[in-house]
Image (cartoon, rainbow, N blue to C red; front, side, top):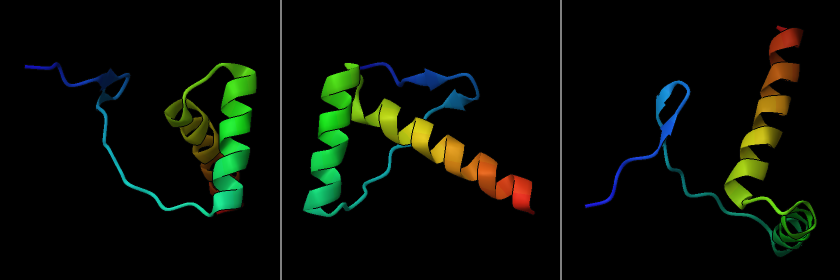
Length: 57
């Protein structure tokens, strides 16, 4: 049995997202260049977006 990954806030959530082929290619290129996973890159981008959004509220 595999262990459930933990984040600093507790158990992580898994989501399925749909991306255009162009966005997928850009994401893959970024991840290869930075030697990071897609999950890491998406989490960082979403954190930055939400932080900016929260400041506007």
